[in-house]
Picture 1 (tube, rainbow, N blue to C red):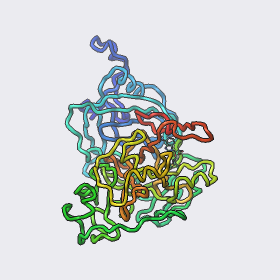
Picture 2 (spheres, protein in one colour):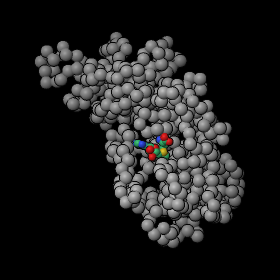
Picture 3 (tube, rainbow, N blue to C red):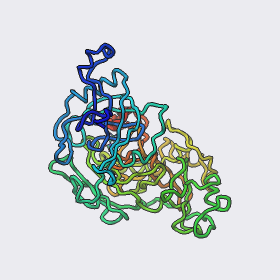
Picture 4 (cartoon, helix red, strand yellow):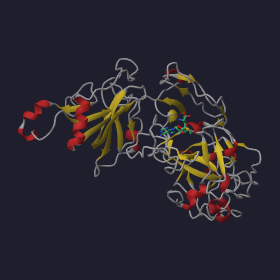
Length: 463
Ligand SMILES: C[S@@+](CC[C@H](N)C(=O)[O-])C[C@H]1O[C@@H](n2cnc3c(N)ncnc32)[C@H](O)[C@@H]1O
């Protein structure tokens, strides 16, 4: 790349035109240094790559000879300043991605992925606690589409084994309950500590007094459900299966409610219409962040529409929460499928003019709690699965999907998290908590909680 002038620095990720260009007449209106190209090669622990949109970490402060982690604050000069000038002067930047490749003599392969514009820049404290500059770049429209495997393995530092994990504090927080271990890492605190104050449980605990409805009748298919005109469950989903078979089952689109096959159906466990019941499919890691506590990421690429995990904990009536004298519980998930179905609370109404299963009438359900709060919630404060560690983002990569798989009572639907996009390895997994601003009132006062998701359109408050 240096030889052909594509990127003229051997080591730096940011290539820029220096002050000498100022002397040339045709450049006199520009401010230098001015960035012209960046290389994304997974060196920076804070980089995020979503193919068409990239959050790039500025240069400097990382331990190039050691584990490549950030070891000091970055400074606004050279490449960092050049990228800021490119943003201010609206000068596009070439984006080159480095990919690990055994077929290359240097172990890496580089692809030119087109022109991007720097649309935003800010500083923040990175994963290792030092100041880093961040630049959001957006791919300019009208260029050939990027194919996903061009960006799939950009985060080259996906650990191959537990021994490669930085800050490992627990090899499997699920204690063997999940089919894939979930390690926890903490590279933020000194001394590091593990998540405490809860017991891992990968199934729902039903609180006393909550009556789980009888198992629904289901379909009469054999082996696998294949014909949507025959399968009674497919008919409840609007006469089609909500999933396609690729990658072990991918949800075609977010729906008001997904009705899966259940215990009384004739089909077997491999049926695609049981996709969310098959346990973890991706290698997840719980990791410590500097500002949001614990968080979750995946070592594997997650294709859009794939099931990630279910939100489990203690299933209880929402009104019981008042009786429990807990000062603050950040792990309550209200089962508010009805809000999504009816587009209430500022929510986008989802597709799926699903005929509600017999026995469920929206109006009757709506009248259950006169103040509009959902009748049931899942409390993952003391017991819960990996979903309890997933943070909120104003631009999330997961979405919440209500799923009915054994009974058809929407008030007690399962809450399952699905990939909203193709998610590259090591990117933090997030969903929109869906709080309306000023909706949390404690002792008559509106409670405000800052949001640190870092999204471009972050509304700065969780609630
Ligand atoms: C369900 S827990 C998520 C896991 C949590 N981070 C932990 O350490 O266990 C929800 C809590 O995480 C924190 N949190 C989640 N998303 C956040 C965000 N975008 N900004 C700030 N805090 C966040 C808030 O304290 C929130 O009440």
